[in-house]
Amino acid sequence: MLTSNYPFQILLGVICSFLIALLLRRHTQGTFVDGAGYAMKEIQGDTGARRFTHGQEVSDEGFKVANGRPYVMYNGWRKEVVLCAPEHLRAFFRGNVREHRKSSYGNMGYFLNQLLRHSPAQAYGDNWKAIRSLFDPLFSHGAGMAFLPCLRRDIRGWLQSIPKTLSSQEHKESSFSVDASGLGEQLTLKLLSRFLYGEALADEYFAELRELAQMREELGFIELPTWFIIPSVYKFLPTRANRLLKQFTKGFKEFNLRMIALAEKIALQNIFNVTGPQGQITLEQFLHTVDEILLDNLEVSAAALSYLLINVAGDVQLQQKLRDEARRHLQSGKEQGFEQYLGRSNTLLEFCCAESRRLCPVDWFSPPERSNVDKTVDGYHIPAGTDVTVDITRVNIHSPLWSRPILTPEGKRQVNGYDLYPERFNQIARMESSYNVVGFGVSARQCLGQHFASLLMRVVLVEVVSNYRITTKQRAWDCGFRQDRTVLAPKPQEIVFEELEPLPL
Image (cartoon, rainbow, N blue to C red; front, side):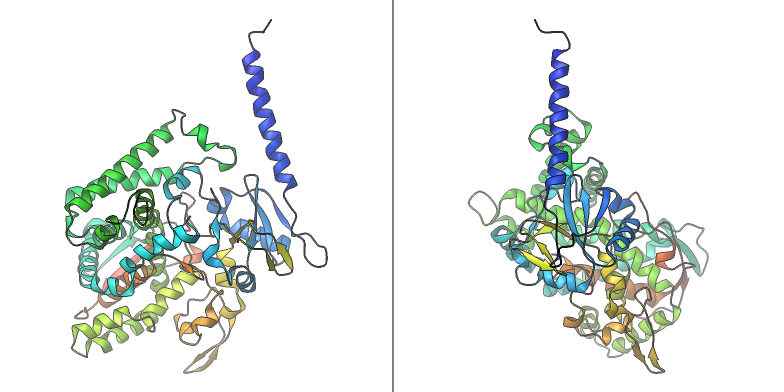
């Protein structure tokens, strides 16, 4: 005869068996051994959430235990090998990076995986190539330059509105101050959405998009350790998070279909026309890619803009050099010549943006990915299919390349990775800096919107320094980092804008 608590005993037994299986799986995963027989060092404890909220501590702990060699950290029960030096990146990414796969859940969490699993961030092989072949032309250098007049107009309007809408104090006649930590989010959303949807994006539709962006942000913050979620079961549970996911997915699909129906002559329509069961990509791949471009990277772009202004605000002499460079190109008297200047990658303007991205990357660690072949990194054998991530700040700041002396008119100048010195990029060949900086991705898997992001940063910076002198009391690394974001973002940091005689841009 069954007792009344028999169902509870069955449930308890299933849970215990599941947990035991996870523990066994965790501790029976292979150990990574070098040629001398030494096992790779490990960080104890789950870093699935800590790498976002306390990324610097995780990085320092890994460096301490492994002394600069690759090390292992845990994401739930899954082991991830962490690369932390340029030679590690070269050994792992060279040769077959286009065939690398991303982990099913990576360190993104269940909900972000549901939103992005068909995007380029997660795709590989033929699927990755199909998506990128359609979307790459949309974000080419030429497409960005064609959008440049609209970009400049909107950024100028945004800059003029700051004293009234974002200033943290009453606007004085010649100066005002702004919290840089939240400065660029709405601007980035507006510019990216206008770039994608064109003139179809009327004010009421932009308001709808902002609501979708807020839902998307909330889904990104839902803390659920991925190691115990069984997707085929969890998706049927009547949780608030699942309802929010369904609401966003439905709303984002309807919004994009409406925009494509209303828009005229936008590149996104051409991609949509080859989307579907018999098309080059599926509708899910299309929507997930648009999500990655527009919403998933929203925090990333906003944080990058905040850091750019904070970094440049700490060097008044650098701002004068930027104004002088812009003035020289304005003196040519040709609007086309100035726009070509904005599009170039060998200017002090771009070097400032590149240096800010190097010094303040927006992620502590890269999303883990897997090689389809065995690799040897720093003597360690890394089997195919192993999750591998990059300690980005360790590479971007502590690589010996960034401590190389710089030649200046006054002679050699000793710098280190924490110094903001944009001119260093004028003395380092592009191939030489490869694997020494993780900016828009590693090797062939560069960010889809890298050209647009670079152009956006340049135009924002040149508009700011052409109209204002900006100052701040702390350097970016001194003001601390927010723990309520999934990206590396600064804590509230005031920037003072002092009006100058504007350059006639």
